[in-house]
Amino acid sequence: MTHRWLVWPWTQGLPLIRNWLAITFGDTTISWRPLTIREMAHELAHSEQWRDLGLLFPACYLWASIRAVRRGGSWYTDNLYEREARAAAEDA
Ligand SMILES: [Zn+2]
Image (cartoon, rainbow, N blue to C red; front, side):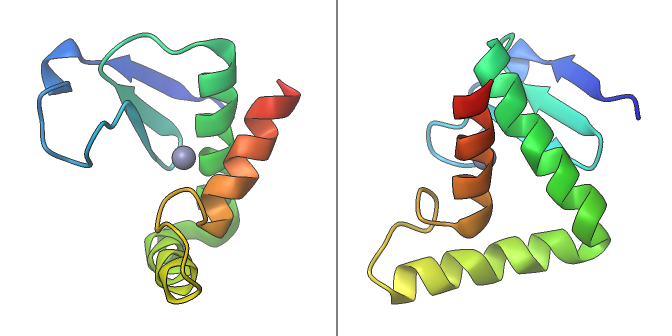
């Protein structure tokens, strides 16, 4: 499957998520600067999560964030899907 990488510098200032770099929707990643190999591996892992879960992915991601916070963690770094993507990046 082809992955689409969009580098849109003008999106850097958008208040999507604090300190955001890239976001993946299905097979498309948008970032405000070119990504490193590891950053690309991280986003490709999210793309696989989209492929596995389809349109349920945003709801699953949100639920994983709620679970992480309820356990006293961070909605982002302790989110199951982010942990999976970080592990993929470490292997890259
Ligand atoms: Zn991520």
